[in-house]
Image (cartoon, rainbow, N blue to C red):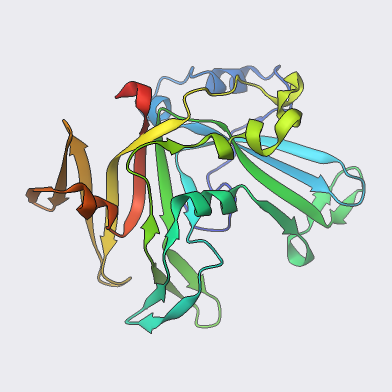
Length: 255
């Protein structure tokens, strides 16, 4: 997986449809895949691109194993130290709001409209069409600086809820409203289990060239820090204050 752009960053599922007739899509969307990874982690993202010239909307559904979220772009950068960019704090909910916000595609990012038969200025809308049992959030902490031609780490704090993360505001039915209720626009039923609790957090410490990963994991109501060969019991406040890189949430009804 790559940290490029706001949209979906995994290879497109072959034959992503605009109708119910695609058998391979039906197999994937309704959990027909045999892999334990896809059954646990795979959700579906929806992308709607509308041409501003003819108003034609192109809709694509793509499977994803994680959702990439930016450190919210309104955050001001406060300087660098040893290859690390210091930024102010943000919240996971704000980052998800940005992920599902309308994006203007213009200049070098113009969308090729098949009806207009050429590149046109358009708007893109991302939303979540299907939630997985285990939801992985990937905080995009590494960015490429074109001027200096190198990667740097974004060293900012993301506040995230330990319990009761409500994903309904970012679902297609909420973001797009009545449009998603049409049968030909929705190849699978809307998820009702949209409340999640965090059960594991991967944290990255240090800078880009010399960082270290540790994992916080919840087991039988207690939190533990896994740091190489050492496993120690920690408090919830230690988890909530860590510099999250990967956040693993599980649907509440599965706990």
